[in-house]
Length: 405
Ligand code: CA
Image (cartoon, rainbow, N blue to C red):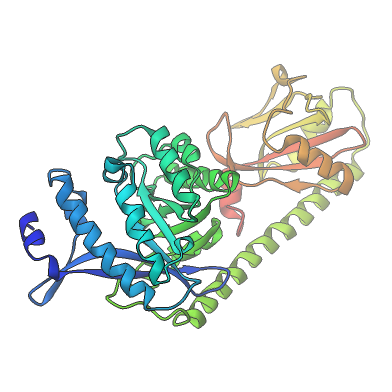
């Protein structure tokens, strides 16, 4: 599309609205404004126009402002003071006049009833070329008016976690498109997981976008997503979707997710109970004592040969009180692990205290083993008042068992 065609046909430029839904209310909580142009009988996206850095800044700003003006007018006609309007701005363009004209456009509408607390400014962080500190100051200034800040397009291109943290947005918009690939890389999931932890730490709400099929919605729900957007829920439209139009459908979807998740958790709970009993029964039969537990580990490796590949014992400060017994084709003894300390590992001490108080075995989450690189789980078990048994369950075993991976 020729940029001049857009500028000479400004009256054909129109705002479209894509609804954003919330998990807690199962209804629309806002709309993202998207630029479109009417060409004969077709409506085309202006996305490429806005992202084309060869188009002079002032052209893009002019079209952006035109859409904003009309969108605000239509938004105000909704007379709904609860709902949010998500507005995209290129951070590079925004900074050209230190964000003044954008703010002024919003302030001008206060007389018509606009509350700035209803505005969410979406900016993209990864293509911002200016000084982050200055952008941060502008966003902080906007916030004093109640404007909320969303960082857009996270997950699509490489995002800077420290820069996102510094900008401390209210909302993180995460793109779920890569999930449509037949086999997304494990690293993609890991990055999404890190982002969700960051969001939790900085108190930002997660909005998952580009939700196009059911399993993406399920992923979003399961991974801390409070807000959702995408074709699966609502396509961008010329009109605003009624807030409760999808409520029943969303409620049904969530109910299915809840049941599935509860079943998975029940499976893990039952497995934990059974495995606890299995070790308990073995220990009841076992009566020999030796200082370094080698005999015990030896016999345990026979007993648990079907499921585990590493066994060892620690005290409650994390100092290993035994050798490792490790399965590498056959079981081998690794004496070098004696007296190593594992208290630095995530959740280690928390899990010890949990076991001490509950006097029960405990199954870890799935994680990558630091030595083998395989996905595993660890079953830990309070052996007596001072020592704890650790049994690493192999990937093959978890894979065969229902619901453990
Ligand atoms: Ca956006």
